[in-house]
Length: 374
Image (cartoon, rainbow, N blue to C red; front, side, top):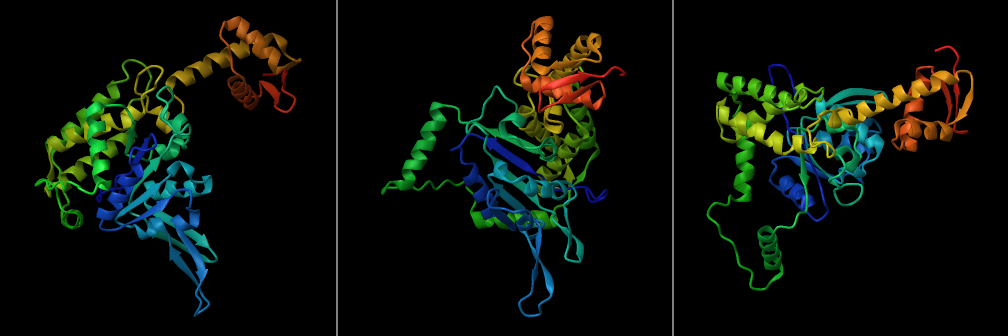
């Protein structure tokens, strides 16, 4: 990634039900990260994440004070309650997550600060619990342009399972019981040792992609592209290929290896399939559609919109020069197609026809005027 000056840090989003220890996981990552900042989306502002211009009390000159993203440079920035951020605060993250810089132009101070940090964020669904009948975009209501910048999107769902529930219950009870059983397992790594290991790996390990790994990356990406079949559904984009490269290099760096091997690429593809592609699965068709993360609309929705626009044009073609109520148009359209059309769907379609100068849509009066010249 240094050769092309591309982003080398991995961004991860955790989305799921309440009570699934998302905040605990973020807190532990912040503890073991050699450098990082923990913040909450609800209490964060745009200048709090980037940088603020304040007046120095001694010299009375304007100075910059770094925010969370700049302070976590070459570290991890943990953002809890990611879905509760304001729109202005969220807009700041677009540049920081892809270009890894923060541009400032305030009070005569114009500069670009480094924000080369990995972002680990957690978000709750809008209905408190994750609705499997809805897509990820509909569940957490985040902009698709922001969702597509995450390399891995994990769905953490609270599903009943006797064995895991028993282990979790025993662990929670042991934290409060007087006779706490200390689990001294030999395979556990001390927290300070793990932090030092991560710091050493980041400082010394710079693996290069071998020929076998490069071949596996190309074939794995092509296999992901073929998962859509003969349809026009996009199942993988070049952004996913870059994510695979970052994940493969990260796995090799964990082993302090000098080269990325084929097994690193296979593990990166597995992570991509169980995380991001599971989040991009359309719940209505069961197929992977990456357009749900990149544009916010699945292939099925776009096809339905095109069919609705065609039916509307056919219906309004014989009524040029007349003014019609939107309710009458929806009623006639439902009778012709034998499909109930919702108010939002018909309004979106009429806005598109208004932009194309086919009709003049008055949202206030809920009427349309069909233009004579189209």
